Length: 99
Image (cartoon, rainbow, N blue to C red; front, side, top):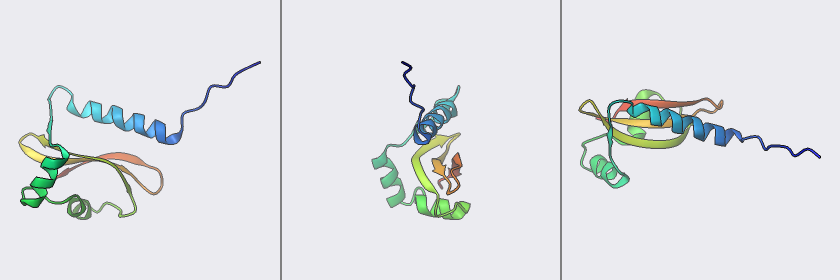
């Protein structure tokens, strides 16, 4: 009697792909990223733009699903690193200026 190996779901495959992609963004240079509280404080103080404002300015489709968000220092500038899933199922990582 054969047992079937379960196939990974699309969501699990996407999560793995994004995790691997984010793991590769640091490479040889370590990125310092803000925690959630620091992000909220930076937005409230006007140090960085809100996520909504950054997405709108970049022309990201409002129907896209945001999978994860980080704000990191990249070469002295703060950037949003955003995992996005478009309506057609296309996943991508966006790096957008936060200031």
